[in-house]
Length: 445
Image (cartoon, rainbow, N blue to C red; front, side, top):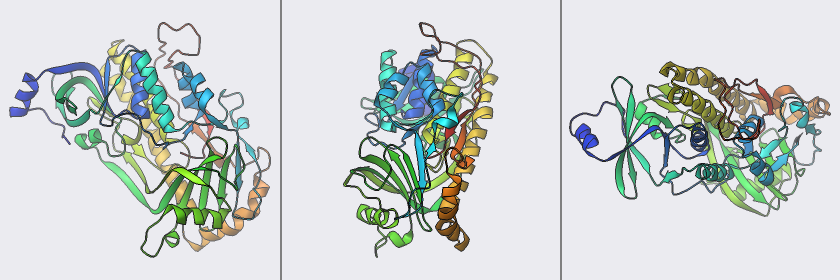
């Protein structure tokens, strides 16, 4: 793991003598954010290289929901029809309490987006599919990902225009990539962020979260986002096709076995006991502690952070992957303004000015929401166990459900830019014009 500094001595000599590759933008990390950035830059005519230490796209489903604003970006890229053809759509939210209780009602999601966006449902299109979609789109634009290429060191080159030299290790050995700008899209354990020395401040929640991508699911309303809450537990379920669902739950210490372990069998027992929800098998099961963290800076000189490299938080809100996709679009427009249209480097400062407040608000709100869900105080347990089941049915009739179900996709600003070679107006054309906030639903990862 390298540190940012001016190359000196033997390192500078090695960098100067070795054969190197030159590009305008180096993207480190080929997850959804890095791939979106690479595709947008290709559309906008910016030379870029994207590297990732993995052997290929993610296979696990991981993040799940695509919100309205992200669907509009896919529309601009000419990709939305592929998403619509493969997605599972959730058009209602069904909140409720524990086992044996009727759901509070049905909240129609389309009502929130009427007159605002054509994509008024939650689109369930997991991270692995997003990555494959964007990898294919990048290939169609004549570019590809340098898989199995790991960033080992990052050096800032001082001069009239600051740039970077990245030492990347691949199957054939090390190579140097010289870039005017570098973007860290390399996740929560970002090598780029670590090399820059940018603090990643925040907290780790004391409770454990479980995720099951389950098949043969029973006890839930089909084709809906199901939300269930009891005094001790919380369940959020997303439809993933007939009989399949993503089950996200909070696990308490009392759910563990005598040795402190937490097996899938124990989680399945908890779901059945608390919510009357069962399933036959799972394609993916994991548990983890939740972190709420925000990078102190999204830009440092020639380097930028996007996605999980810039912020991590609870999946409550379904905004993690979406925020990263939208950051990538914002940054691509800014980079194109500078590298293609010759705007001053100061144009790039707007990326942090526009996007870090969004990340800060997102981390804060999801932290508070998860705190309410997991609080072990007697008052919180009483509210979840006694008050919520009583007032829930009264407040979730028709479209009169509490406004907590709604959030706003952050606005993006930038100059208007439309890619050449596009015949459809409004579809397949990357638009960097300022955008009004878009209503969306806050219910998942």
